[in-house]
Image (cartoon, rainbow, N blue to C red; front, side, top):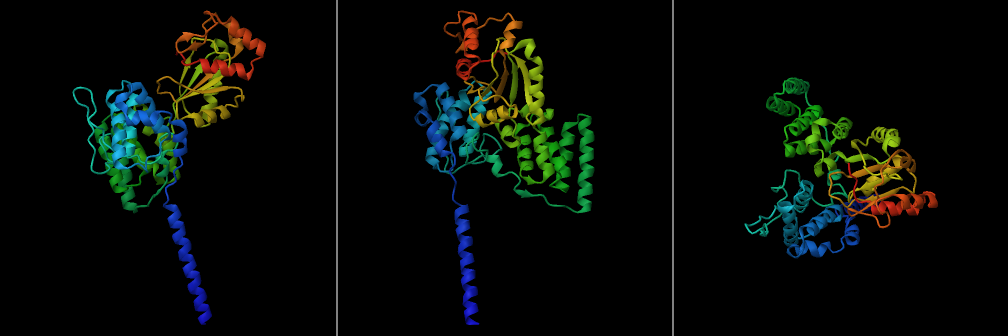
Length: 413
């Protein structure tokens, strides 16, 4: 008997050690993005630490690199405040709304309020005594992983168990929801919002009421309110809630906030534009590309035309969306020779899918040359003769496609 007791005690002790070991390993932060930051940062560490010595364009660029690759949980308060000077500079002074939103997201992620700017245009650092994760830059709290490389909302996704309520509470919630829908149809938006909240008061996990409340607030241009409710819906562990988050990607009610970085992160929405660079001969192919992407649950935000002849399909992506660009390439079964390159222009578009084919030259009088930073490519002399000859001689070789892709920096719609 004593031998059995000792055996039981040993097994219990071993089990406790295993549990403690698991808990210890679970709490260890997994710094998965620092290596990317070290590889991609270039001079950005210096730029962000001494923004007064660099131009606004340089600070803005480095803020985007930071938001793409930098892991922030390991940064002490004093350093966070120092980096916030650079982000505050962009937030105050950038002319592009997207650039300002990226800077605000960077401030929110390091939990430092935006530093004020004085009358001379200088940022005055006001270091808080503690992290302020519910700061003035918005209601969405972001911490930890870099925005584009690791989605912070993924860590909250489907983490809250959806609980059932009593029949009486469910009936009251559904009644309020139906009244809210009726008011919405009458365009009595404030009443609709109040009734949606009543529905959620009776049943906090009324999925449809939660979604419709978020969409109603988006229509009313209450960006923070809409994002807050979408964020909560994203955390509910229920297949219908997950489907509604996917629905938001293409729901026109969210048009007002669709380009908000946090909306993209919560819903997985990526702004994809398909560009026809082959004129009339490419129209059907562009339609096919759009239909094919949307069947794969990749909504296309717009279809536009290039005023130049493109000889080869190309895919362009904004910093942080490289993986998505290659995902689109695979879904379209594009050849391995197709150019996939990063855009250097300021744009809200995340991915441009450009259709091109040599046959388009036979049906157009367009003789514009490829663009290199706004100037015609050397040797083209306002015509495509040398470029066409190169394509024919190389038989559309991959090397030539790469040269063309690297030279293009802008697509005129």
